[in-house]
Structures are given as structure tokens and as C-alpha cells.
Length: 67
Image (cartoon, rainbow, N blue to C red; front, side):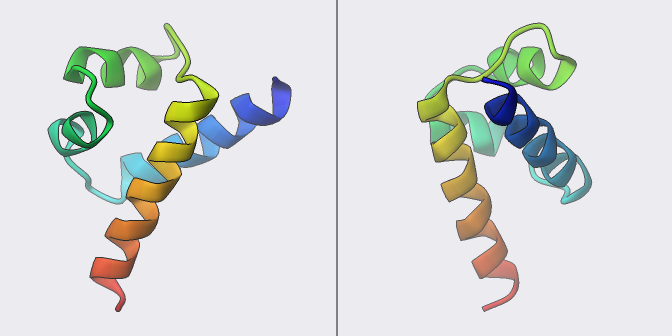
């Protein structure tokens, strides 16, 4: 679980500074923007499945920026 938590914090830092819209990520993950905000604030944590989906989303967005 510690590894998953570190992965989330690393993804959060990347997401925060990469200027992605919370709504876009929420739509991709099929969760509310409130859920994303709770994750970012550390009130709750995404599941392992959602972590993998976040990684996929960020990888796709990075590819769009740097083809």
C-alpha cells in the first residue's frame, strides 16, 4: 500500500504542474470532480484500478503534447 500511495503522490505532483483540467480527468475516470479534489487534498485515495487509469490518462496526454 505504501508503494501505491507514493505512486499517487508522484502522479498528483505531475498532474498539478502539467495544467490538466480536473473535469477532463474526472470525465475520463467516470468520477466526480469532487472525488478528484478529495484525492488531491489527501482526504481519500484512489483505488489501484483508478491509479492505473490515471497513469493511462497522463500517458495519453503526454503523447498528445510530445508526439
